[in-house]
Image (cartoon, rainbow, N blue to C red; front, side):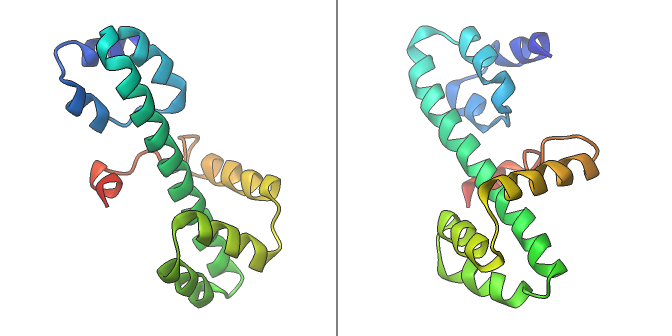
Length: 129
């Protein structure tokens, strides 16, 4: 997998590389292949992108959980009113979830999705929103 990333990195400009969805496990490999002058900028971008992807995955998991418990309307109201982190916290409070319970829910959803990293396969257009 690292060889595929290396092949993709060669010849790309930084802007295009930043649009690629690289999971946390490959971030270090990509950084090692970058010219020194790109590494700091890419590192900051990759960390922000990964945090956003994790937050969106949590929102998707919470949306599914809300639907299962008949609280879909309340969830959508919270989602319309606040930032992603506020929605996650407010809904965790509403449902009485601890952080580890939410992490367990995400892991189960990953398994049900065939083992892929939940939320990381979303198109770049979602990141731009």
